[in-house]
Image (cartoon, rainbow, N blue to C red; front, side, top):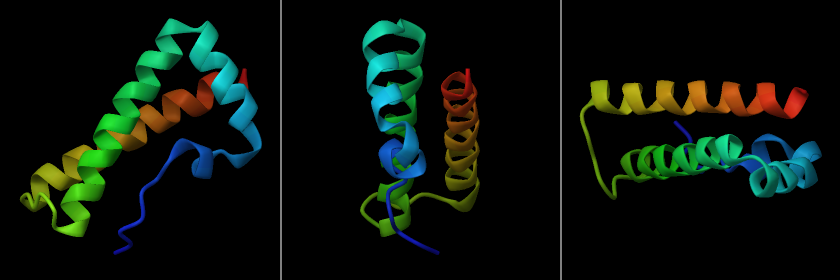
Length: 78
């Protein structure tokens, strides 16, 4: 399993400027980004063994990250 962080700029390289603009102009988008980064860092720490957790917790965090990413993607598509 890869231990690479899933940063939004890497997930949506074509939308880096739009991500920045939405972060500044849309409070809901900024909140989604903050939540995504928080859970993404937690997943990365779990994957890399820095802060190990059980499989259920890691799976739950991955699902949260995916849900947040889907919401962010939907806002970027508008």
